[in-house]
Image (cartoon, rainbow, N blue to C red):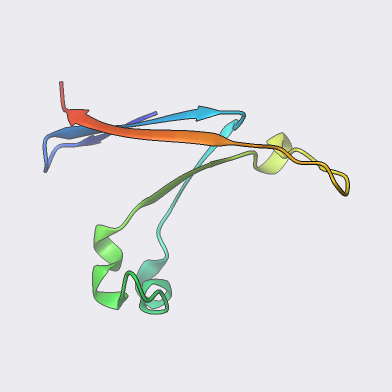
Length: 79
């Protein structure tokens, strides 16, 4: 997945392994206010991109089982 940032003229590439879903979210002003590392005044400058296996693509795990996801984020010039 590539996010095109026209303001800073950059492309943010997100690669994933063992994850079928891309989850993009923002906590909103109130949620950001509850986050010590973000703050209510920064909510509109924040975007979280996560990988997962959500909804019908979830992977049920029994006790003791595990599933590892990998995510690689790179930033380069917008082309």
